[in-house]
Length: 219
Image 1 (tube, rainbow, N blue to C red):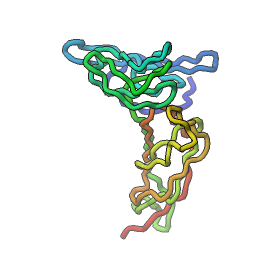
Image 2: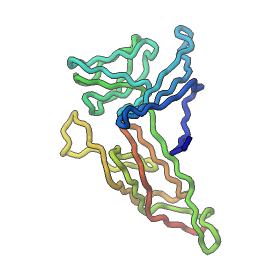
Image 3: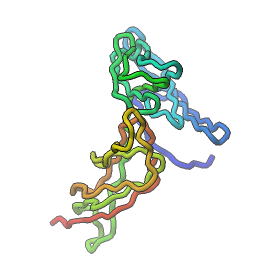
Image 4: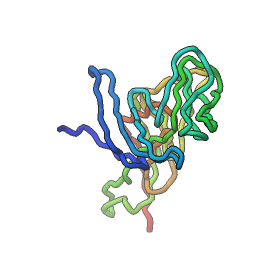
């Protein structure tokens, strides 16, 4: 079979099975079954993770019917903090009670909720030829770096993120996804490493990285 891409993931528990479904070339779903352990009451459990075009929370659940402001995740996740999206817009996270239930900030017809996770991309340390042969041992800094995004949220770059909301976007409305180049200027001196993260339950689609890298000879 032809391999198109690969990625490394840490789940913290053994993975029993995985599969990917392509439905008529339109919808793509990735299913993963992993083992977990809740507590002495519930014992070992099997978690089924579904990653599709709009699932960006672990163990995601969704309610879609008459507007309401309550969610029910089940007792096995009692006291867990979950991310919440109401009618597509990000709402404040809530902590489930002892019954795995919670009241969200406002009512909505479609409420999505799940355990949050952070998408992480760590670039390898950059190296280019220099008068001494390599810049690997020199201090480096990205003077400017651009991320090329497609239908994506704006991620953090080394802990920095450009504003993600503007006055033109109404309250309780999802911020539109971005297609274009995101610029971050004057990152700190160091090894020139770049860490890209996204802690929002929306897609991070990165298709290119380029910029201006400066180096300073040490010794």
